[in-house]
Amino acid sequence: MRAALLVLSVALTGAALGELPPLERPYRILMLLPVGSKSHKVFFTSVADVLGERGHKIVMLSGYPASSKNPNVSEIDHGLKDFHGDDMNLFDFRNDPTGGFSMLGEILGPMVKKLYKIPEVMELYEKRKTFDLIIVDQKMNEIIYPFAHDVTYMTIAAFGMDPCHSAVLGNVQNPAYVSGSLEEYPSPLSFKHRLMNLLQHTLFPLYLRHWSAVPPMQKEVSEIFPELPPLLDIERNQSLTLVNSHFSMDVALPLLPSQVEVGAIHCRPAKPLPKELESWISGAGPEGVVYFSLGTVVRENSMPVVYRDMFVEAFKRLKQRVVWKFEGEVEGISDNVLIQKWLPQQDILGNVTKRNGYSTIRQNRYLEGRH
Image (cartoon, rainbow, N blue to C red; front, side, top):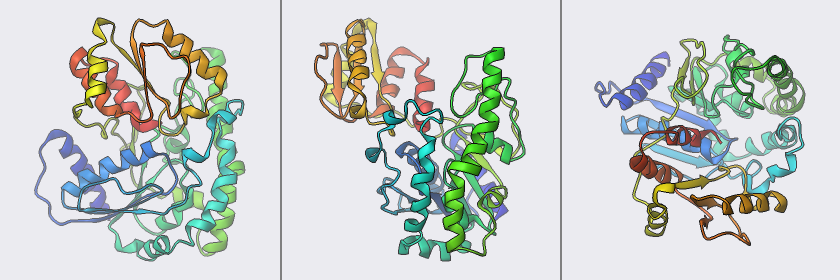
């Protein structure tokens, strides 16, 4: 199984360099992300496709329909909608000091029962030791740790560097300059921000792991698998993590050999845009285009009217054209705004990059997988 970790590192590095050694034998790899946004699945799928192209056999469990076209990648949609953005209004949590994480215990505890009653999930669980490697989504997926007991497994941190996750691996990040998960402060941090950041690094993990999110999951898991050790003990046995970050765009961090930055690995060459969209963007002239999207988790049509109207008024004052991903109708928009329910984000940013050079678009493309 250790060899499988080496194969993964070589495959991903070789894909970036364009040269790979011949495949000695295909490995069977199980990827688990039962909880997470669509952007996390985009990131996982990019890794699965690279491994599939090398001939490895991938099985991926998620809460979304199959999207990979690689014949070596098999996908299982568990069908549970508990964590889908369509069923949540994150604007309801804008006054929540935890940033909406307070709802995790209410959602993830009951989800454990439902997940392990699904025949396909239990069949995978029974066969978990037949896989050469198990890969788990790091953020909020303690629900699936029973699969990782007594096997070699690794994680993918699609959300980016999480100081709590780093500490679990034995690398405690310095709160004097590494921002916590809730809020990122301007660098260099002032004394006030360093103090607030210290509270983030200490109190927030305690809240999630020992009060709000993990205890309800632990209770349900212990009833189903009474012989298993605590979830947080299983978590410490991970052998490697791939982190969706990069020193060229984030704060430079001290990392262990088991922490590998792979930011932007999910980015691909831009495809041609639909004619209407291409015409709108190319017709913007020297002023350029503003692309506005709240990502894959937040539904724009759940935005309170007062905030939506603020954006409408702000866009009216811009010289640039605006491409706005919005699922509903918006009244009073100006002629410089194009609204569509869905937009090919990577293709938009990639085509703009070709025209305008390699600038901040680079960071925007990389952040797509971290919503």
